[in-house]
Amino acid sequence: MLLVRDELRRVATPGDHALSIGVFDGVHGGHRLLVARMLEEATARGLTGGVVTFHPHPLSVLRPDVPLVYLESLERRVELLREVGADFVAVLQFTSELQQVSAEDFTRLLVEEARMRLLVVGEDFRLGRGGAGTVPVLTEIGREQGFEVLAVPLLPDNDGRERISSTRIRQALAEGRMEEVAALLGRPYAVRGPVVHGEERGRAIGFPTLNIGVSADRALPPNGVYVTRAFVGDRVLDAVTNIGTRPTFNDGTERRVETHLLDFEGDVYGQVVTIELLAMLRPEQKFEGFEALVEQIRRDVTATREWFA
Image (cartoon, rainbow, N blue to C red):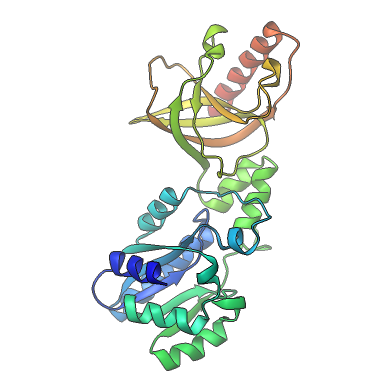
């Protein structure tokens, strides 16, 4: 618990606070609505609004046998929460020790170290050992410890049938439904990483690519070719991106993210590039030779230009 206290002391701004708590993976539309409501209620009460999040994801501690990938990097998650308007974001390391802390002890820590006076959470929120801290339980704890609890209804999608959730976004992403992913997130799905050296085969066949060093714990859509938008420094460029193992070259099983920038020449090695994945053109496939591959790449580039047009 010492690490938790240190982080709260390090980032919490002076004064009394309203807080929202959660993993906030993806910082999707529902997350942003929750934080915006917390900030609105904070302003009405003369409080400062902060967010408490966890890393790694609690599931990685509760279910270490289940592989877990993230919709956003921790760095970008904090950036997005700050962009919504949070005055501070406390990143708490989720450990087996923290897993055993009761809801009462955890909220007491927030009251002592962050002067929490209002807790704004989703209506299905649970906190503490065994998930015992439901909204009604937290409301009772708040009466004893001196904070108010406000439960916000979960945000439905555009047709109002299902609520927006990170699980839904992961499923749509895994199936390559990029337009749906963007609708649920409230923005196109993006990956970010440095441009690293590759074998330069793309350059040899007339379609140079940027090899993007994407973290292994980031969620990616299925192997395939995608219409993308690339952010390179202060430039925004149309692009076509391949995600996969490059079966034509028999490169093994390592997945790579390779982006061909349309109408661009230049050296960007070492720069950090953001790639927005806008639409899936086709699944990855193996070609009989370079000529067939080059012809398909030409068609992919044409399809990408038409998509942007």
